[in-house]
Length: 334
Length: 292
Image 1: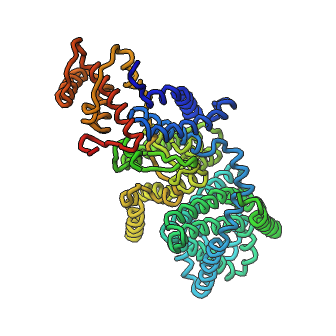
Image 2 (image 1 turned 90 degrees about the vertical axis):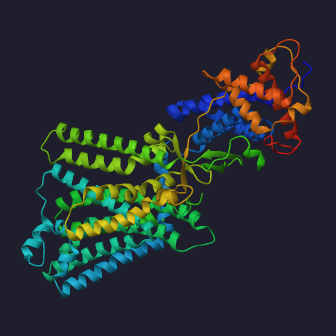
Image 3 (image 1 turned 180 degrees about the horizontal axis):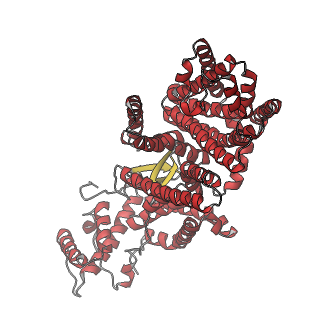
């Protein structure tokens, strides 16, 4: 034919096979996951993807065929989702997360976490001092459901009884108790993080009131000379649980700090960066809450020996500290 | 980058990300309504699974009502509430069942891989953005102080919920701290090349350069749409378009009669060749009003 052939027509004819092959792979991967592809196909996927992207770049300058352009745009996008859309394997990711990423994220947020712990301690001191001076404060700091019938009017015997009750409970009742504690506390932890978005103010309030409550309890038991026994009752699970709360509070402050203190990065970029790091802390800490609930739901109820309670509590604390300070150290930069 | 503006007509939902390979990809931001619908679908699934699961756990698991059944129900509710979105967005590359139903995806705003921590971050925020308001709605009707506290919290949270309406990328708080956004997952099929059909249609119809210089890219792509159109009125439209073009370019019909479809296809191919040739030399003519 005398007529000069269309360049864009030849261009399409030469590459069309690549596109349809990629299209088929992406469709299958979307329907049944990347696991459904054979190893050969998995190797082929990025090759086809790059070829299609380069075809898209060329097409943008040489072809005016709208359908081809739209198709390549959409295919490029879908292949991009497929390749950069997140890790498919949960198990290997989970191992790496707890071995390296989580402790590293905690180490990087050491100061916000210390701040959150400090706020809790401050709350505890204030709560203790106030309640010791005037027992009526107890009612403002401790909610009825947590008080468990305990109050400034309780006798020493009643107070002691609560510390050792539960030893005779059936296992399935403890089970429900532990599940309740876990879900309740983990949710509070997540809330601590999410509330960091309001410049950290609600997070600080939440931490402080938790401290106040603790302080009110210690004051209540101190008044009856039962402080060592209360401490043992709290230590067995509290070292894990309060640490977990401090971690989540710290995560909340990490988010808040990105909002409050501007740096060379734009606020939005910094927020995204910090937010992801903080989210790692919270997700990892769910495991701590789980451990704490087991210790509280079973350990505390079944183990009534004071020394053993102390022993378990401090061992757990040492274990966590060792884990956060040492785990994956030196491997977290990649 | 004028080259990129031509293919798809501009609209306010359009955004561009640059893939790690350095190629800009254009995508469309999801509408707020679509995202709301997706969340509602997901919530419906959560509630359905939760209710049936809890009822099944409490009635089917032997023993009295306060034991294993309760703990299974509690754990199930926690798992669904906190990990439903995380699980699916990790497994399905940024889509939950609701998002998939509406053709939406979560992607990294900068164009990189959607990292697990980004999925964690954006969904942990739901604790405040979604579940807190829901539980507040159900806890109304307390006494004076409680109502006041609830109202205050609701004001705070209202501000948070309104966030997607106050930024042009429709980011909610979770998207902000995760560095993500929600886009449409495009769907498009490769149709036959309209210029290819000319070869089958028989002898060539020739147009002069002057005739081809009447139109620009916009008209070419409109013509492509007209040619691809199917439906009851398609033939009618093509006839009137052919008539208008013939009049405009002052076309002299050859001795052998030419059907409207053949004329349009030939004109499309010739015009595309003409415009593409000019584009290669850096002269892209947007539409017929664009001076050459």
